[in-house]
Length: 263
Image 1 (tube, rainbow, N blue to C red):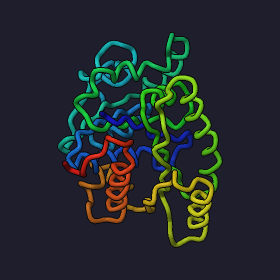
Image 2: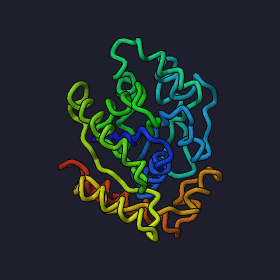
Image 3: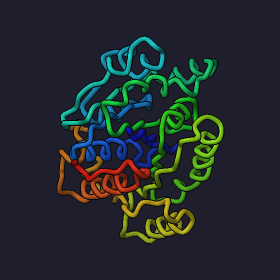
């Protein structure tokens, strides 16, 4: 069964898209057929892999509007086994357009239906908000992956996001589960970073991944080259962290869905 994972946090700048790109790439490098759907109007998941939408209609915006199928706008990347559905700035208008639509929470789920058999993992990079697009991502997903920056301000909205996940589960997607919370942009040399990481673990325990993603210059440079960190600098600390996180994600598969990495 394909695992559909929504990467979500309503706060920007927490490493959400960086996590979506690099975990997807690491899993693809390990041999898992992986699709990354960019649901953020900023379009950084696509551009971070060197891809842009051909036009608004030939992007995830066109998919949500019913003009094109998911398969028609899916693009290959430089990483074998990794494909991307790019976004465009017009996607911001979809928040308004979908608001009045019938069954608006299920549009992305419907678009993904029939396309999942080709992939073992599908990642949905949600926008930094709790609007209709993010709810679509969570409704289409089986699991939610939540990146949290190791700073106190980044913790403020975490309870709200976890509440939204619970609400989506109760009302529209009973199969949704919290895959886990990953601490990102951690500067282990500072007391603040260590304190925030410790507080997250104290409150959320086993829901927090063991892997912590460090603040890493090479991670920041990679998107400007259109490459995931596994291709830009596979030996840096950021690359090691995302490979470790990918391994944890594989091991956290629901019962009966696990297979050896790269198998």
